[in-house]
Length: 288
Ligand code: C2E
Ligand code: MG
Ligand code: MG
Ligand code: MG
Image (cartoon, rainbow, N blue to C red; front, side, top):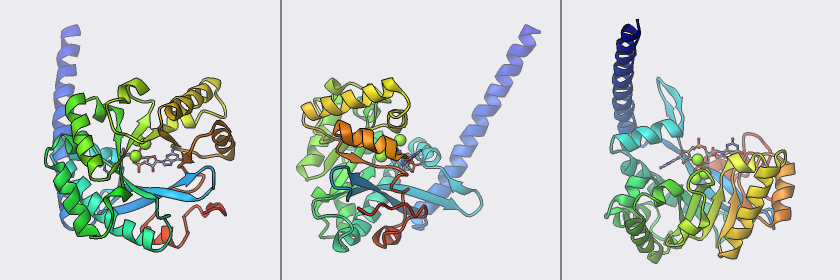
């Protein structure tokens, strides 16, 4: 019986692998088409200065509404893109679109002159020695006069730890162009500020799993408070991700966190909606 169970398990395992492979290929094909036909959407979530209550930057987040499949979660298509060689084409499209839309956000005064447009990048983008040139070209095509110092890239700790020497060198090439670098989802990876030393980063984004707990969980509060303190001690600005309640906002203000992002102010929306000062939740604070 044990043997039967064993082989049964293997059959299921094989089938699962096969299904996953086919699904990746099929979704990858559709994603490739969507990139080529320019049918993805880029939405922007405001990042709010906790001192002034005003918008200081936006994070670009890709949205894919598929004809047959419906809404596909970014976590899904980003992982498929990473497995099918499509992540750099996807992120190049994002940079192109973000600089074009970003130019409108600055021109309309939605973003302050010293603000930023942030894009998420993956490990393969940074591993590509040509990526700096690709990025410059994408910005130039999107908005010729969009300064590179208005672009921020977000990388997770996992991306940084992939090959520390090479990654640090790549990132210095990017910062030499003026691009800013933020550490995304801080706290979910290596979670040591000491590891960040070799990287030319300016901004630490504290993951929403910790931020979500600060009003109800003493250790989450202690973690976020000490991350903010340590980050400031080494000259990094801090952004709290996933802020959903005024209780969380008050605690973040009190501990001196620089900025916040989350459903309290609104989800990512299309560029026209952001310029019009509208979000589906209608929950924009007066400071915006
Ligand atoms: P991320 O960079 O950490 O982005 C923040 C995620 O948190 C977004 O999910 C956003 O919609 C969500 N979020 C924002 N505020 C709140 C809140 O108050 N509560 C909760 N529960 N969630 C909130 P989204 O858009 O589903 O994206 C998921 C991840 O997919 C992103 O995490 C990012 O790592 C990745 N991603 C999205 N677009 C791109 C892209 O164009 N390229 C790459 N390489 N990755 C992308
Ligand atoms: Mg991000
Ligand atoms: Mg994040
Ligand atoms: Mg994330």
